[in-house]
Image (cartoon, rainbow, N blue to C red; front, side, top):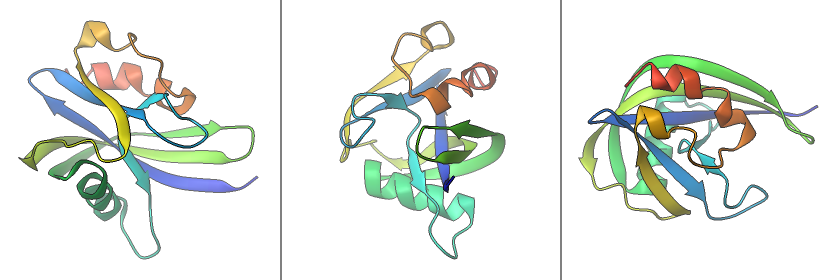
Length: 128
């Protein structure tokens, strides 16, 4: 099975996490932590900064690795490194996502998360 390596930003601000709703592709309308694929020659941190700049027009500070989620979708295996992040500059402009929300600890399960992202929710709650 093909493995896809991605990174995800767990953006924390004011005791809330930033979640985005996919606006395209096979998993359209599912909620996720923003991020994307690691390109050849990039570190996970470099990939995450690039992806957030491209998708949300925002510069982030990448902090500690929260966890790596390993998840088998029907057609591929996803390896997702999830980092705690903060906004350095920018306004989190949605360029590719349909919607976004800031979620408090008691709201984490209020959106329809993509299966791989569900696996990190409990760890994310510890950041709040």
